[in-house]
Image (tube, rainbow over all chains, first blue to last red; front, side):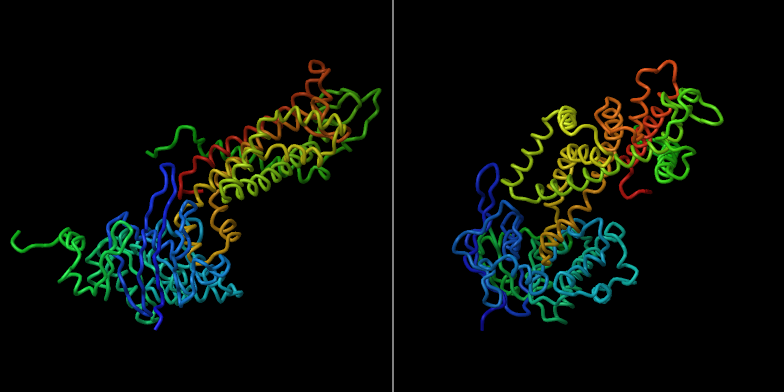
Length: 266
Length: 278
């Protein structure tokens, strides 16, 4: 069976004043239909660059190297014309960003930002788009969704903003959602709620999630499988149980050792 | 006690400025109906020329016995209309040029900004004078077009700088991530964020084009007579500043009141605390 997403020998480099910096250096992995997989690594290990490259939304100075392939349902996204790719983004593949405060347009109503996903993917009827957005805002657990539609991002708390982002990303029930550190910017208590929500929606709609995080606690709670990334390469792939109990790679052991723990009697 | 940036005018001056502009705009719109005399028609030049202000002629009459009050009212409509049209051109062309340059790749951006540099380096007054030398004096519409088409470069710079900043914002990336096409990203996500800066730029532009029209017309290279405008009335006053003060004072007051009000309101807008009361 072909996996939902398969990334083959992905190489991403960024050019800046100081020259070319390789962020992702020959990464290969796959995500199956409906699976929740973690991509773990410290900051700067190339996790986010991987996500942006899969989505095809690298910044202007970013380039994907030759020989790379990103296949969704067997189709190579890197070889696809931008027009076609745009039709997939938001519909088949979507992304939740780290900073909901920055990833929502500050001068646009939050509901319009959710409804926009439906509109750019062919919904002609504005009222229908609005109704869908309201229903989705309700589904992500926002109170009084009809009134909240007309709120601006600054009127919402961090957790509520991230729920709006999730509503936009999952509105069209994409096959794959890339969640790039979706809880890192949130309070600890809100983190658990947002993770729970993501998993609920994932179970209900059969969406696969590629969860990008540096937080092994989050991985343990949510994922079946984890991939450990370091310096642009994946150094270990294992089930979460194996990863925590029998890490094979030296770096994974270091990561685990760096996790804060609450010790008895300390 | 509330902290307030030092240059931010208080509520009262801002209200007075807004009221002044509202009155001027109203006058501009209603001028043809409220002017007591035909602004272009001469009275009896033997008995009615250069009369000082009186009950019959509120602001007096000019050298060919026209009612200055009526000329000022209609002139308000001409001067402000010219300025408004020029400003519209500046905003539209400036936003389009700056918006595209800001979103474009480095090569397109570079040549577009070189064009702006070249236009900014050209002394505008000279260009206008040269053009008018060819065309002769102009209709208000043509003058507005000329002023507008030579005044947009600074606006395009403002817009481009803002767009550059906004284009790398996460919410623009997020919009791309859900498949929003380029044109819609520019129109719905990028350009709205430039509005506060454009507003500030528009205020500066308006404060510049009102005196520019008056100056050009005063020097005899702007709007063709007999169309009245603030500059045109000043033009008529140029040889008799001492014996017919009313020809000089009233249009000057109108120009000064407009520019001052626009600047006061502009300061107030610029220093509006983000997310605070509007």
